[in-house]
Amino acid sequence: MSKNYPGTVDQSDAPASGDPAVGDPAQAASSSAKAPAVLAMRTAHEAHKDDRHFVTALARGLEVLACFRSGDKSLSNQELAARCRLPKSTVSRLTHTLTLLGYLIHLKESGKYRLGTASLALGSAMLARLDVRKIARPVMQELADISGATVSLGTRDRLSMIYVENCRGSVALTLTLEVGSRIPVATSAIGRAWLAAIPEHDRLSFMEQVRELDHIAWPKTRRGIEKALDEYQTLGVTTSFGDWQKDVNGIARAFQPGGELPIMAINVGGPSFKLSKEFLLEEVRPRLIDVVTQLETALSH
Image 1 (tube, rainbow, N blue to C red):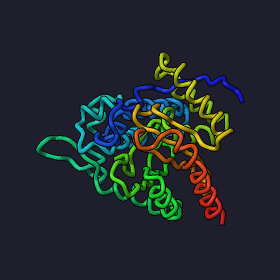
Image 2 (image 1 turned 120 degrees about the vertical axis):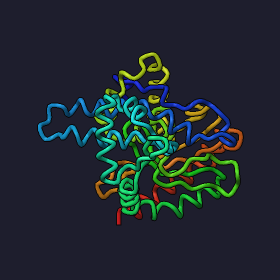
Image 3 (image 1 turned 135 degrees about the vertical axis):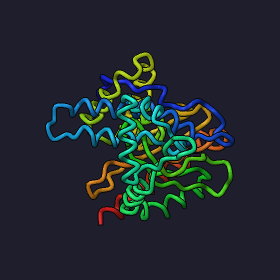
Image 4 (image 1 turned 90 degrees about the horizontal axis):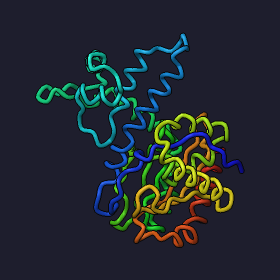
């Protein structure tokens, strides 16, 4: 297997370490994903600048909406301008237009904006059409109950994996991540599973896209990705034992849901003091592989 990957992943995409049982990994993941996610948007924008069918104004409006994360209650024009790397005057016109269309709501007291019902309708419509969620949830919940972990279904969005379904075990000490939460691709088990499952040219393209984010962190990031690719061949899953957060362990496996949907992945994770490396690999790994196999079979009919 080739080890020569040209790109890098921004280690700022990984949230600060903390106790997942008492902290808020969802908020940390959401916050930490903002900068690289915006950089990815700008990189994609630049890649299409010579496409005469590319509508720059529309792209910028979508960039503004994409700046909002699950942990954000509201954002000002100045905050949006910083995240989008656009002039504040441009952002002001965009937020005005998006407010008139119902995609944003202007809060008069603070002068900030929050997502409007039109944005909610878009997200709800997308989730409602994801039949894979309905099929996956029962087997995911069963796995969560058996393992006492958090079991999540996700897909890639820019430089993050975004959760589209989430099931918790019956015990209290699980990760506080919800649907819509984002975690970094490079250091998480679910992100590494996605990287291992996509075609090599797509993986190289992804790595090239994030090349300029953090050259200093690249050696460590590269080792983690190389290890993940080897694990996927030998174990059938990818792992993250303290790589995303030092007190969080997880394993994951990817699959193709069909229906022109992108590759998705399911992970099983939780606090390391509760989910040891040995338990995840010896007890949970065969069950996770079986769950994904069941899901692939169900989706193929």
